[in-house]
Image (cartoon, rainbow, N blue to C red; front, top):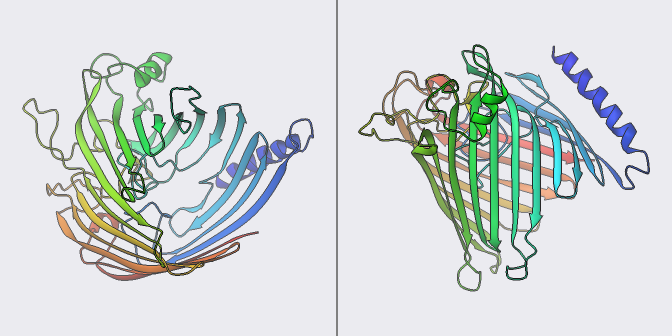
Length: 410
């Protein structure tokens, strides 16, 4: 099956490149090849927006072919658990403000650089078709930096519905009324799959309507908003951001909220430019008087699991958890950066035996120290991390571990 999938994608890429070579279709073409190799000595909890980890060797080979109006990527990945995958592969075409595409791309829907409550790269990407719109608001009464974007996709997730596939529909709109201020509205809907209706009525309900009752009451919606504000540097070089996502729906509006907040201080005027960030994530949900909300509500619908290949598509701490972290990145030369991270984490605060990470409540620290080196098209990165608690469901043990990666662009 994997070989058939690779052959289908290679055929599509061959046709795509053959068409793109036509000078009427494209006058500018670019072909790039890159490789990535990483090693993790131990499984780690992925609390940063980084490559997915496993206690194995991880490798990736990517080929990008771009023209004026089109882009394609073939990504071949391998690790000891997933074997060969095509995660990161896509074909897309742009015309004006619109981009149409199909593939398996990571989506990070948040103004945080580390994680997202609704869609992060903690889980593998879903197979999807998508449409993106981007444009500047060219009105004289608005600042020239004003712009907006809109993205909608519909994809397939594995294991979210009784170990079978179901669909995931996502919508995100962003608005920048002026430079430094950003807003986002986001929504995901899990719908269809074995035993449920896959009709236009279901699709319209997944998009717009209340799904608490009626024929489409099986649909699981999550929705919320985010904000980011970068204070003018001449005042203070600080960015403040946040996100609130509701797991349940009440009156066609989100409820049962989880929260993310943080700030980043950036100083580029010193000899060693430094970024310091503090971030808090809380997926604990209190019980409400009507009983619609409560512990373990987040990411746990009674029909659909908010997962793909067994991992939550939101933040890595999953339901009923907290994370309070400090991130420090310092550039000590043109080629070398050093990084330090420390986090205080609670997993499964309510001691729920069905939690995906741990059968019992766990708390402790995760510390990481490392650095990276970049020169031309070669990058090297490594760190040492320490975690002082176990997560038996995720096969993550306490203790030290090392990470090393290299990447080359040809």
